[in-house]
Length: 108
Image 1 (cartoon, rainbow, N blue to C red):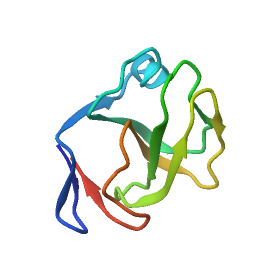
Image 2: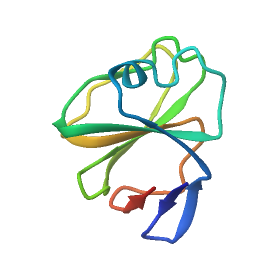
Image 3: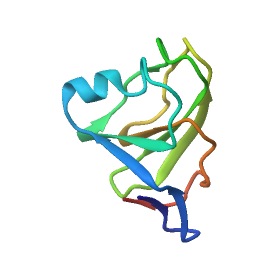
Image 4: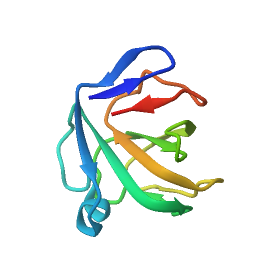
């Protein structure tokens, strides 16, 4: 379960933790819309481009720091690339607009 600790609300009841290289490479590509949040975990801060190639529906991306504080929320359409302005340790993909804002703390 993905929880917004700032507002004490549930963001997503289902989560999929993506730790392996393959899981982080695939994410929501070639999937159908889901009510799960895909949480990508990195060992150290990264600044990677995020794309929606082969994701056939719009998604939301949330970038988080090591404290799980939201740094950025971005709505991406299919087949687009997003270049973050800051490093992140976690990023979350959802098919729905998250009940969270920049600066909020999340937990799972």
